[in-house]
Image (tube, rainbow, N blue to C red; front, side):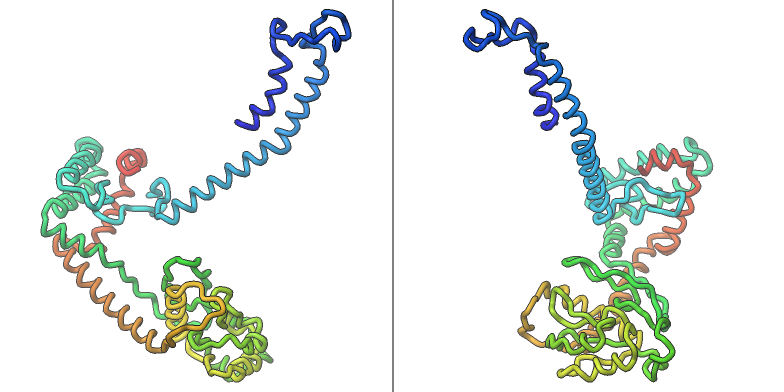
Length: 368
């Protein structure tokens, strides 16, 4: 808008009414006692207008569209980062309410009166007498949710189950190849996906470059907590090992990117023996624990760790903590499931199927 005002200002000045025309002094006027007509420079005005229109089309409009696109992309990324994905896509099995609070459309800290008001509002929309028989199952689930949240003891047990992150056991997979996941950005929480963080090029190794370690399905791991940044391993196997830019520590980014002979030279070239051959199960745990530890330290360029840390000990503690968390989550879910006729998993499955039975316009109206 500011650019438009500045661009139109000369035209407004030239197209003023005749009674507001500026009187030119006699000494500078071509005709004695004459006034300049506002239409005397109409050709120049048209030329300037054409120039401004061309500039708007070639520069201003593309820039405006570019900034609009960047703004929309930033908004989408912010929404994804905070877990908001716009409208619910129930038709494709999308964002079904994950908790009873989302099901009723209230905040986690809402009082009983607010929850009751939301419950009655939802029931007015999905009651079978109003919405038909296809909404009967959703209405029954609303009754179950209200029965839990209106009771102090039941609600406390349910809230306790929400404080434990759901534990999902990854399927046991010993395959030498796996799908690669990009690492998290600096400052983001490190997530365990049940597979190594490095790429796997195991099936791309030429026949003449394979050896005993390849037959045993072994993989290379660098203990970054012991690495002294000597660059020897990077020089021996540059297609498999790199130097991390944040911590200046060697790291395997692609398994079997080089031949087995080159990888063996990289292992033997390390002066502190921080490179070793491990199995896939060991690799995915060690890489995750290393990423967690390095992420907690932050960016440590060209500096040494003040206190050495034993990585195998960290891995053992992580495995034990993961086992305890799984048992704790199971107990919490069992405690919360006592207040339902079914388990929490079965309840959410029923909720998913019941939501899909509702008409799309009713879903949009009640859970938009």
